[in-house]
Image 1 (cartoon, rainbow, N blue to C red):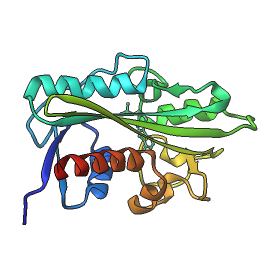
Image 2 (image 1 turned 90 degrees about the vertical axis):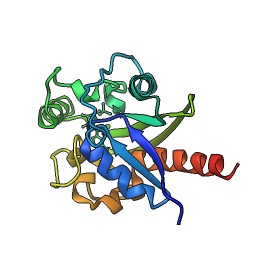
Image 3 (image 1 turned 120 degrees about the horizontal axis):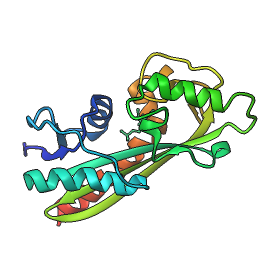
Amino acid sequence: MTSPFTLLFASNNRHKAEEINSILGEQFQIITLAEAGIVIDIPEPHDTIAANAAEKSSVIYQLTGKNCFGEDTGLEVEALGGAPGVKSARFAGEKATALDNMTKLQELMKGQKNRKARFVTVISLRLNGEHHLFSGMCSGTLAEVPAGKDGFGYDPLFIPDGSKQSFAEMSMDEKNKFSHRKKAVQAMITFLQQVEKK
Ligand code: IMP
């Protein structure tokens, strides 16, 4: 049996790492920053999700020289002109918790009829010094009240199209049937499989 292809994941978010691990299968494996003994808080200074994803992979590639990828995700709400978008992590302030962010979003959406929203994920892969981008999107609606205990971030408020449950009411496998992250990771996997064949 050949050993799995390994990539460093430029993130401290254990929820994201768990989700990505549940998608990868045996052919690929990720090493988190914690597992690699790297203690760093990578900033998200840019105006776009793609640029922030690229920042994460660039910082870790420059530090280690190893194949790695960064991931950035935003929740875009139609009635809010695409906000919080690239500012999703800091929507309610620099040190905001997921609950702070959800509470702010609920307040802004009170009485709002158009509840359409979408998650967008961009992955930035540094492979043998080359840069590749992959993206995934999931459209849905925002619930009036949060529901469910699983997942993370805005999951209790987000109901993907095609389901009646919020992401936080789903198992990881169920979330993966709809998720933005699953689509972006799958695009990266397909690309890596093609590269491996060459
Ligand atoms: P970042 O990609 O780590 O900057 O995350 C942006 C914000 O979106 C953070 O508040 C995350 O908790 C939230 N977030 C990222 N991915 C998801 C998801 O899959 N579901 C719900 N919230 C998410």
